[in-house]
Length: 302
Ligand code: RIB
Image 1: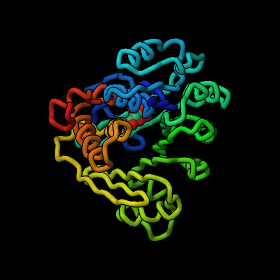
Image 2 (image 1 turned 90 degrees about the horizontal axis):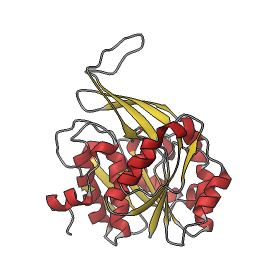
Image 3 (image 1 turned 120 degrees about the vertical axis):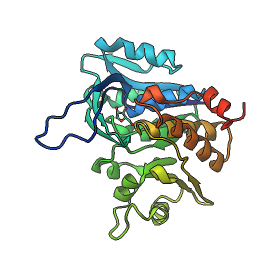
Image 4 (image 1 turned 120 degrees about the horizontal axis):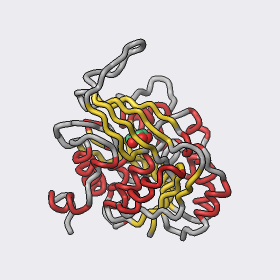
């Protein structure tokens, strides 16, 4: 079984700051790093480090061949990677002393997909393969429809959340992985807020009864709901350095656990442990753990 991950690739410019820059303020940073990021690339790397077969469907500039080599080195399949004239997407990320981030995103090449590209790449899938998507690329609706024509399992992480997400054929999504803010916006119901995770899940479940819903709650943990069960797993208490890519790591390891036949609770626990490792160091893809690290920690049995 293979995962096709149709997702963004960004060059992350990461600055440590003691607070986020305010309007009109010029703020100095004494720590800067440039790294591979993008929700798509991070999730592909998490999947590959978890030993899942993953093909990344993405676009980068001809000038950034290093990204292709880096993905390959991590074990990500790159035959669906286009090298184009447009600039690679990038993100300007401020990371505060509390480990919170503030991200400015430029989509660049991530915004140039066509339906025919996707049709060509997904024609290589087999029934039962997965299509994973986030919300930093164009043509997500087409990708969903094509995936279902090919009898694939679909997973959507609608981050960063935009109004376009609500117009997607969400009934074609098998696994929806959202945080509280995304869930609140998606539920779009007066009186229902991000502080009511259980009610949000029930509301989304009523609208999409076949969907498997994963609701991440940051430092509180994660909740899951489908037609037969509701599961809660608390977060781990760790020293947070940078939360960037914690969600991406979670998704990669959650899918790995489901693909390898584990129950939902185990999948949530392993994914939680993996993302707890990610938040303990600076950077996106650079801080995603390997399967071996999780085995060494006793989180996964070899
Ligand atoms: O999820 C983290 C990612 O969001 C960063 O790597 C950045 O590129 C943005 O896409």
